[in-house]
Image (cartoon, rainbow, N blue to C red; front, side):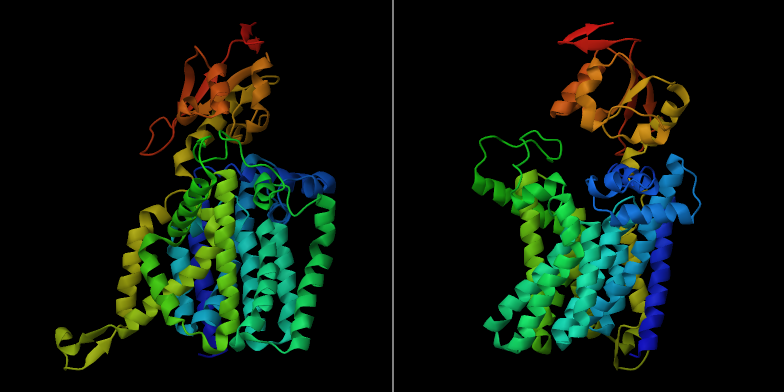
Length: 517
């Protein structure tokens, strides 16, 4: 195919991505509550507070900076909906632009025949739309990460140093979006270290040393000052636990998907972590595509003149899998969102496997009322196949974002209407305070809520009232003996959480375990 044909395909695929992500952004029941941190950081950057918005923030600044720029560019109001709209626009734009490097990576690894299908499959799986149209940093990260991945693959295949500066630049930008960005230069250095062991991957020694030096010094110059000012690779507890600079999560820590058995052995912990990692990858790629991943990987062997790129890919996949296992072992959680680096390398492999199998599928002409010649699958067959996959994924792919938590937006509207000046609101998610534009107690300071006589309202969902976590006990104590004054959604759909609003008497507080007024 010519470069013009590839460009036409990419433009068409970007249009499809814009349609999908735009539709998803317009059908957001409620944003994921991690987005509250990103929006708060964007507000601080917008106010010129670099200390709080850049150095003291938990999250890395690339996505919040994108939110700030989108908010200014859209001339959006400073309301909760205005900031959410700007955040989703920043995420969607990055997701649409991400189509370009994803296509190029698939082209580099599996050829042009599979590149378009890799993007289509990546857009069809539910994870993509629900992550890249939400108020999350993944699309910004993946945009820079995937560009860096492509330039690294080109360097390894061609050996031309012209590809190293963009690789390092994109890796730095990916790191400024999420700490995982540093995996790119580290995996490239590991690939160079392994090359002398394999005859088919060797570089001449002067070029080998120059490449290693470039990959060590370049990132140090670009992100070293930021790391030094932050005091580490990342200030998120998950990063510190993964690196071993912080202790593991407590057995009943809120981030754990389930409480940890205090008698659980280390061996069992890592067995369960490996299982959780596999389940996260399975859900990120989607079960129907997994058999085609196996076929695609099998067809890519032997790699031939692409031995060096595939060595790099193998190291990225292995390092990512080990990091996910470590994440679950130390923090007790691992979700499909955390497996996106792995997923968007495996989905192009699925595209290659599917395309190859479809190419080998032939239909006797007599079945179609023609001659006895066997015909290969044409555009009509592909349309039927993709329509079938779209129907299979459709309900989940096009479900409103975070539909199960829709009650929090209604609760936020109630808070905005009914909570007056000086009255406190407690909501561990922070969502009702955000949508209601009222301050209050969230998970970070919920332990102090019971001693505040100005706390009048508690917003809590049904799972919190039944949960085993310590903060659930605190919430139950706040609403003990009270009946909700409002429940949302008023007509809940299947699998939607019920969100309750409780009103506490004026001046009610607990001191030393006793309720006082």
